[in-house]
Image (cartoon, rainbow, N blue to C red; front, top):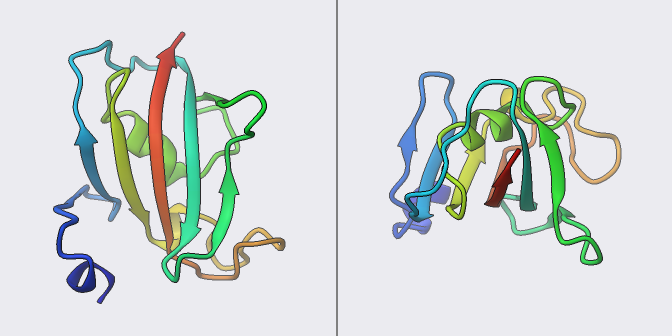
Length: 122
C-alpha cells in the first residue's frame, strides 16, 4: 500500500526482501567485503515518524559492514551502492529490528523507510 501511494518510488527487490532505489547515481568506488563506510542516515517508520537520524554535529555514522549492530537490511543496501550515491530502502521487520523493535522508537515488527547517502569507503 505504501508503494502504491508513493508511486514515484521505483524500487527493486533483493532476494532477502529488501526494497531499494538508488536515486542519485555516481561512478564512485564500490564497496568491498570488510570495508568501513561513513554514511548519512535517516530512518523513519512508514507513517513518517522519525526514528533516527545521523548526528547533526558529526554529520555521519561509521559502519563496519558485516561487523556492526546496524540493521542487516541497511548493510545489505549499502553493498549495492557506490561512494556519493543516495538511496532509499524499505526494510521488512526481519531485516530491521524484528519481533521486538528497539524498545525506544521502533516498535515490534515495524517496517522501516531509510534514506542513506554513502559518503566514504575506508
